[in-house]
Image (cartoon, rainbow, N blue to C red; front, side, top):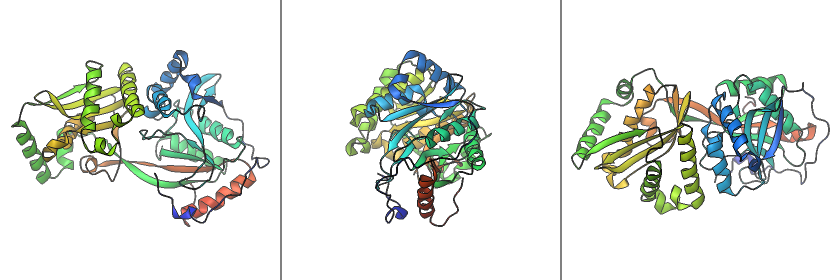
Length: 395
């Protein structure tokens, strides 16, 4: 659970924040937002439109694609709590984002609207058709303004702070003179370079470290036949899926109860998401085997022009040979993958391994935006000023 920030310790809301009167009026957006129960999108025709949107999305986000988000919602038992916001142009799906009416902000009872993220969802960017980024945000904020009740503000977590979507949000907030703030900033470690894999490895990893990894690989190879397999199709997929679950559960995550196999819902998500991604050509599997037995495995989602590392695991009894690092060295082949310009590790800069192998960074943060009429905006203004601790608000 996220720790409570200091600014919340002395902050409290009124007992009720009713629909607080007239709201600012902006020009009608080019399109409209409809909030629908997520179960209404769990059928063939809706999924087909959803998949088409994902292909043409301004910002790739596999975690909001149909084959990932639907099983994530089913496994959470979310019922009617999570809504899917459909951005429509002339009735056609042009944008999508899951939202929830959250009752708490960190540990305090501060109700607000938020993008919904499964614990195994690492990017919160909505899917929006290219070229419609500004109309989407105008429609989104117009919809949020019209929501009554106690929702004080709109909070978007794990939002990329660069690219066309964020630039459009920045522009729309400015044109509407709407109070907004990046309340938390961080970076995902990414892989992006024009260098060939071996040249990148030599430029990134010190000669001393490369020598050590080479020694470890040679020692490991002395214990058996060492091989790498990379797969994009669905051949032996079921077997691969179960082998990963077993390998991960055999390590510290299994002992801690945080392995995918530790819970039926996450094991189901793993199986369904990988099958769905493979069916659409959006899965890459990489494995290192020793005498045919997998000792390190990695599943990545391929959503051109980007790739996203989803889950990796290794045999912890072989930790002395750094099998995870050896697998990631092989994974540098992503630099030459057709149609892939960059790869998001879905890990922050505090990751103990990937930060030493990948040099590039992608800014990601949490954005809060004022919504509604004057009273809600005034309360939000005071709260965000305290949260920012004197830092200037704005995007």
